Image 1 (cartoon, rainbow, N blue to C red):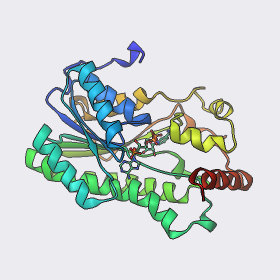
Image 2: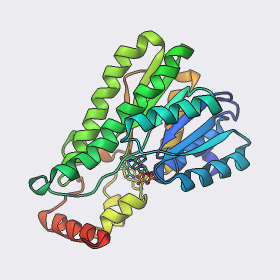
Image 3: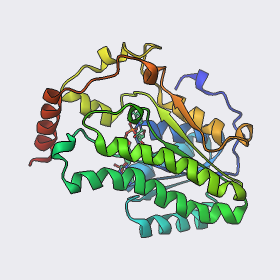
Image 4: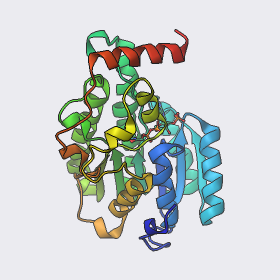
Length: 284
Ligand code: NAP
């Protein structure tokens, strides 16, 4: 971690509990690290409980904060409610929720079976709603709250092979604005952050079946991929007292990629390769 990422006071969010879904990998790791550096206590939740517990332990050691690692599938609404109850009992809050969990894979719309469609909609869109609704209960009681979801930019102009993910993220943008309006009266702010390309495990997997990430990066106006901490710092800012008049907003953090005319084009040939690679990975 470069020291230039330490832009907030270490006690900025002391006493606040942040619940982060998908916080034990990729961009989620940058998010939890930046909130921990700002003194917040953290609940880290995703399906791989052991991974969440390891990250929780590391952060506890590094920053001297309270943490909790939870196994949670955000598609299961009853389990989501239970997880928030447990987090509230053990950690207080949550005062801040980060909806970061997502899943996606390339698949052409014409061959999309119901199961594949639902797989992504259920995690990205339904999971975001279930967690927001569960957090709302505690935020309303507390008289304040902050919800931030990770969206993307690619759905704004369409993204071949990603009908499910683009529809889900467009839904998250709409949900962000609607919840911001509904919950403003409870002093609960709802915003989203749209990252540009960052080479996480999921992105690396997608590029394996064709395409060159290094070449793609050259098309980004600022000439490089993002750092996970850059997404985390934007979220800490949005959760901080400096942002108490910001709600219903979607912030792009992408080196200008979303404005670039040379967006990644996914050809039908590459889509076929991607499907073959996915089938091989799953042994089907
Ligand atoms: P990632 O490492 O694959 O992160 C996805 C996370 O979601 C994982 O920690 C995963 O953990 C969790 N997750 C998946 N299904 C879940 C479920 N059913 N319940 C609970 N947790 C679940 O990918 P990433 O690139 O960091 O993505 C993080 C966020 O950034 C996503 O919302 C993504 O859409 C967004 N984003 C990424 C980029 C990029 O270039 N990387 C660009 C734009 C937007 P488990 O496997 O343990 O469940």
